[in-house]
Image 1 (cartoon, one colour):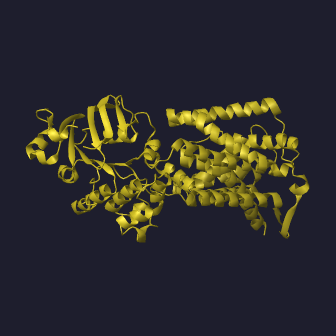
Image 2 (cartoon, chains in turn brown, orange; image 1 turned 90 degrees about the vertical axis):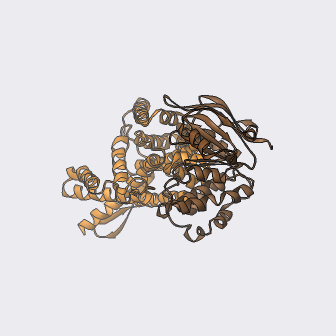
Image 3 (tube, helix red, strand yellow; image 1 turned 135 degrees about the horizontal axis):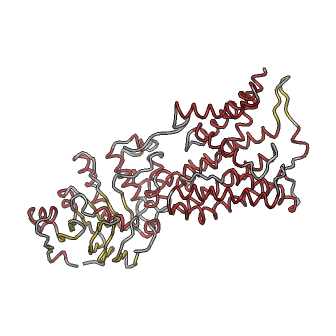
Length: 246
Length: 290
């Protein structure tokens, strides 16, 4: 197995009094797609936010590309190669489609993606690049949010709840892009409530339940019942396959 | 014809209000900070122009060449230190801190320069005017200030819409966290925005000193007019600020023409009317992503 791009060790994150992430450890390898699944409030988004630098960990450590990034500011993490597509898109609402991408490209690292490349990836964009983003549909806004993160040329792309509020056909189309992005050398950590979608695109899956790891391994190795138990609770035993250990 | 002159004078003074207000608009729009020391900063700029430029053997008319860069630097430093510290605590702290700053500045100026009125000396230019019709006088100074206001707003707008840094400023104003996720150091961007705001307030302070006398406590009433201009025009819209300033100027001049006591009252009535009928201001936007 190749070297770890992201190494999360015993991570604990609090939301006020609430322990949102409870001693979670995992690693993500170069070129890998890891799906983080779990019910609402399981701590998935908090975990992603902490990796991107928006939340501070209470304890534990984060290594990216061999460097401890636990105390690095979020904008510095972007220039190191970590980009987050936040839950709810969070586009710059007073700006046009193109301006949103330009903001993403301003501090970009060197790499395969630029605005032209994003326009190839989403061929509907060029003709609508001067439109304000609030005029776009939910799926289109999600595409802009992905494009804005990709133009920064991340090594690690963090995707938070892409499916939220979108029609199934649109979700399928957006997840259809994952192989193309991975082919450019980008590793992906995807957080999803929609389990089937998460399992379909992932090389490995990591399930959170009330902030704790409840299951980790290769999707094919688990029965739906095992996943269901890890997702909803009822017997909190950590199920691990041998491939999952790294 | 009398009314036409009132209108012309209103537009001219409105240009000054807009110049005064655009820094306030920028600070509020980007940093979400209501800078209660804004008016006092302008007054400080006036004092710097009056008392520093003679040492540099520079005519006071050209004092802005020195004062504006100084203020841009001061704006950046003040933002990265005092104001950022108060933003980090909570929004109300910024009100207290800038209010405190205002009190400190006024008293320091009183202590050092006394309460005597000062003017930025521009020689006999102050009395010259263009006289297009029998009772219409267009003072060259006021015209220059209006021209400066339009130019400053145009350049600011151009900077915000076309330059990379300008786009980042708007991005931070829209969504600070999302801007960080796009690699923007929002503290630095805040500093740049504050720097621009302070540069414009320096221009406004010098313009004020050219048009009339100022004293350590002149900041307050001008801050009030600047607030009104921003709210009438719509928060976040620079051209709205120009229109707001001019609307306020015209209302005040019409009020004053009816009875000199009504000058400020008429401006306040317009302000309240806009708040009642169109709270987001004439050019304010109320759009957000669903």
